[in-house]
Amino acid sequence: MCVKDKVSTLPVVSPMAPMAPSEGKKLNGATTTTTPTPSPPTQPPKKSPNDFIFGKVIGEGSFSTVYLAKDIHTGKEYAIKVCEKHHIIRERKTVHVKREKDVLNLLTHSSFYAARPGSNFFLKLSSTFQDLERLYFVLTYAKNGELLPYINKVGSFDVECTRFYSGEILVALEHLHRLNIIHRDLKPENILLDENMHILIGDFGSSKILNQGPPSPPSSQTNNTANDTDDDNSSPPPSSNPMQAPRERRRNSFVGTAQYVSPELLSDKTASPASDLWALGCIVYQMISGLPPFRSRSEYIIFQKILKLEYEFPNGFSPLARDLVEKLLVLDPSQRLGAQDLAASPRYDSIRSHPFYKGIDFDTLHKRTPPTIYPYLPGTHDCEDLRSVYKVSVVTLI
Image (tube, rainbow, N blue to C red):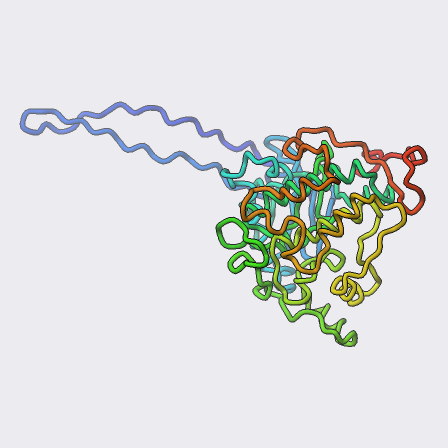
């Protein structure tokens, strides 16, 4: 992608001046007047690549590249996701791309839920446009990048950081699920950080928009449970025969990422909001321990560990965090902590009230200054006096 030449400033459309009534014909001695019908206001021109200066690459995918870009008219910075049309067709991702646009539009323009605190925790879609070869998504620029490098840099988060960032993720999920959207690929790589170090969740290509109405508990879901066989690359769940696993992995037999995918997506390929709560449990575990709970060099082995609920806590893992994780990583989605909440409330009250979050005001998290990221190494010691004083320098990760 080369830097585009600047174009002239777009013409400013002035408000339409009032028009004086004109004299009409005389009928039966009386003079009638007619008032011309005003034309509809001129719409601003649709954006194009020429309206932006494209800078460095800040992200890459199988069929897209994300650039830091600046609007030449306003000077505002954006992240522009550029999708190659021939790659989309070749990889059979047409449904994937359309779904992402639909979800971003809902999150950006849903005025009914705009006042909720959770609406602050998502990338917003400023505009879209296309040319002969590419699609362009103009998105919020998350200045501090992905959450994952911060976990990797310090090894693990301390309890305060984990409580804060997992709390923001929970509030974001409340908002997302009240809009009847399941993310289905929630993981630290898809959680970005803005200039103030608050989260911005992105990457909605694997998401699902459910039917209207408040989400139902998983045990009674009909319309609000998503069957994932309507994806353009769907196929049966992984076989119990390990010799067949590589072929099935190539067929992309599940939606999401192996380490965070919920067991119901592996067994019967259905997802509910509780599937995202499973991912939340995995992320809380990873924040404190430094690694996902289910891990292996083989995706097939990861799947088997998930289906058998095989994972361990390292020495020194926070007892309250452990209790929270154990109540989220439950094989039966209807029995996960919070799974029954949204049928009666717009919030995950049972998770909010868990002792791990004691003292947290969830509704003001977006206004708080995030805590400094310090490491917590449960495998070494749990004594606060001996905890490392090393902290992340945000500048080094940009």
